[in-house]
Image 1 (spheres, rainbow, N blue to C red):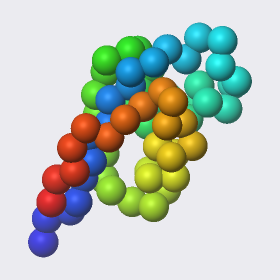
Image 2 (image 1 turned 180 degrees about the vertical axis):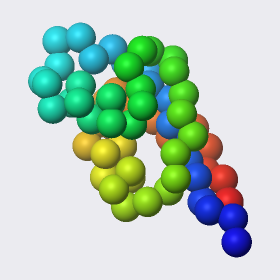
Image 3 (image 1 turned 120 degrees about the vertical axis):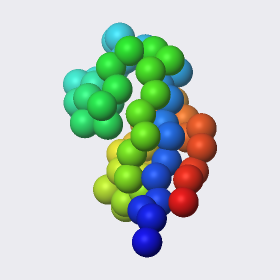
Length: 63
């Protein structure tokens, strides 16, 4: 059974953002604009993405 994944892209800078938002980006494996990551689709990852919708967007859902 294949795991579901999502592709997340950072489209805004973390400059002048609260530290908790920067740490959330680092937790997702993102730290520069236009960088993408393929992550396992879990409730914790979805929660992190939903906490910073002004910085990241979900490009694709696989699986």
